[in-house]
Length: 239
Picture 1 (cartoon, rainbow, N blue to C red):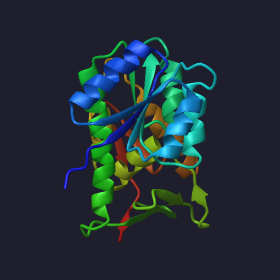
Picture 2 (picture 1 turned 60 degrees about the vertical axis):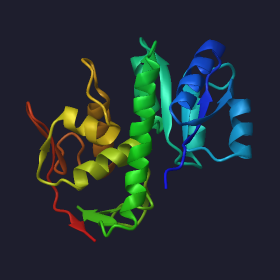
Picture 3 (picture 1 turned 180 degrees about the vertical axis):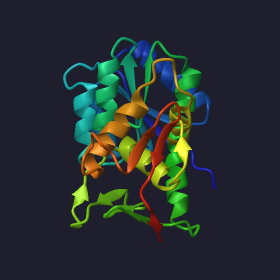
Picture 4 (picture 1 turned 90 degrees about the horizontal axis):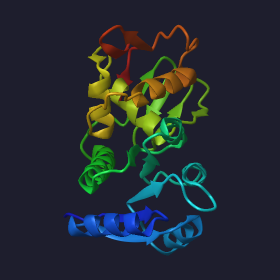
């Protein structure tokens, strides 16, 4: 049964907020809006949402701080809106756990496509719970729990991953020994093509290496293939 997604738009620009809400509603979404962190907290306390569209520049608590705070207690998908010149903030947003980002000014159709892609990834993970697909992947002393979205090291301690890091690591673990280009990885994790200056995959790979490699500067698990992309070189046991 199809369930209409419930989206919370956190944006202080009333024109942008109204435009986004109107377009999402016209495309079969339920939408609530908030102009700042305080309104967002009230909305989250009063109802269930499937995804948050979060502006970076907000009065009071900014989007990066909000994203960090939400990720402490929730895995709700977040699509972050940023200014075109704020590449560093987009990178930080991904590091803090945003699932995707979109630079302003943007076409509402592209925002809708990003929202749907993120929601599809979440649905795919839920489907894995009942379709007989592997629930855990063990590699190089680590254990990746697909349903709990949790990575454990050899001592059984949790290795903290952002949502974007988990999604990318899962794609790699599920395809060991295959060379995957940056474009392919971006498509598999975020459902979109790379832009001319797209660096998010490289940044996420670097962060993942810091968390799973003995020596991140000389990686043995996630290897770089020159002019090709990345290859997950460790043996994987899936159950």
